[in-house]
Image (cartoon, rainbow, N blue to C red; front, side, top):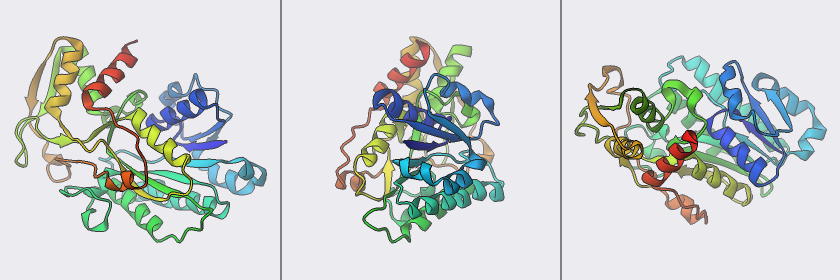
Length: 314
């Protein structure tokens, strides 16, 4: 049995679907359904059990029989709102909870794969997974970096696997509940349907209108990387998960417009509150991922967006 925290969320539900529908595994989902809208991501999945996030760690620690049947813990649960500035709340959810869960897994030699984030790099121009490139711009990025640093200090035995995956800008099915934190692909598609017009940020920090760059990666590819590590239990470490080929927001907007067959771009002022805490360019450095043998190929933005929009319009 595999356990997925955040399993009713965006990436977690996609990963659960692959494990259940494609591979026939049992999956226990851990989440916080205070926002009940997320239920729709897992409503059609034949999960073996559901446990509330606040009850899970005591449940895991007290249930020895359960521990023996666990094949992995895939820890995707977190506060992912990058504009959240309640540091105490962020650290409790993203750092303290993660430490407790990791230590419980280490005691039982349960493989532990968790979601880190490209937010740890801030405005760095180098996205190699090394400390000198890490300078987060918000408390979300800091909470992710602090846990990565905690993991780096571990001395693992050959029986233990701990993998951190630094997701870049993920888009795909199942993100509707994220609201403002959903991908720009989701928002551009919504804007085209509502008004026929995509709103893109004007120039800022040396980038022309709509030319800010992000490494957009399709959710299906992110899940495949996670499954690759599950199938290679001897490999631990912290790895980037992105295409390595960034696209401009104009590229994304035009791809969405082309899919619809009509629409236009309008440029809006760059928000003042984001100017100093915004990543204007991200590009995954993939050498470390490739060096350990992970050969998962990432869809380019044109193919990924087409698959995504085809899926949600079906």
